[in-house]
Length: 200
Image 1 (tube, one colour):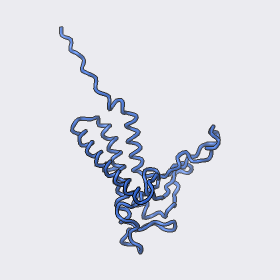
Image 2: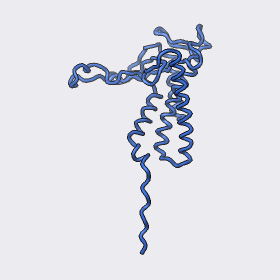
Image 3: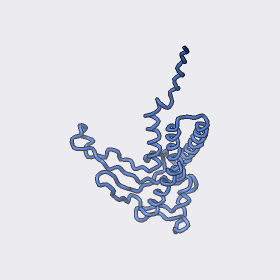
Image 4: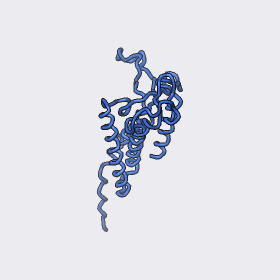
């Protein structure tokens, strides 16, 4: 969890302070870009409308993190499968990473624009861009692979296979959920009863 949080926040702060909105840098042409956007919602840019929606979403995230933390602590005492606990830890770290953006970034940074990056709020002329719990989530990972010309659905050809821009916290959540789905049968099935001992 600590490793995911540190990497997630280090990348987000670096992008926030060095990229203007929508600025991008190509890493693997036709495959992967770094492109800075901000969103006030959930993973992959989804959102609830208005200020109330923002507060509800942040409160939900905090409750989810507290619940998962309690569950992980209990599982550590009951001997749950280590892989299951690690998958939950990935989900917890991802949720916590995006919570940090929502809770603190509005106060820590100035507003980013399409012309220039944000700065620390105490260094900029305009100060903080939002109250506590109203900050935007920083996204930057962009898969640019497009549907090939031979794809049977003609209306998809040339469009991106996965257009949302996301962050490391989103990746951690997705990997944790996928890990649980793939391994749930072996992790959650009751252990078979011990074989009876045959005397003689």
